[in-house]
Length: 112
Image (cartoon, rainbow, N blue to C red; front, side):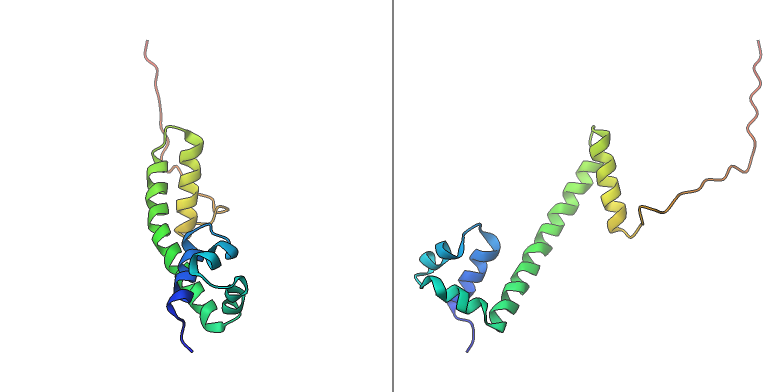
């Protein structure tokens, strides 16, 4: 049996709202235990996971934009945290060290 319209609406409410199971059941006009029965179904769980993944993908775009704006923050701690997060997501390990070698000697003469 395929997922019906109420099951699909239940998934949507579970992913995108803060509603509890009892509230969702009331909204859909089903018995409280109906949602528990639906959640025991493999196809329901798969559809729920797919919808959650879709929801997180849309949030990822917003999160990336927010991190980009936080890098320019006037608060150094916030900017540093955003930089670390971006570098981490880009695959740079926090334990990696950056080494800089100075190949030439700088000579400063003070003339009075």
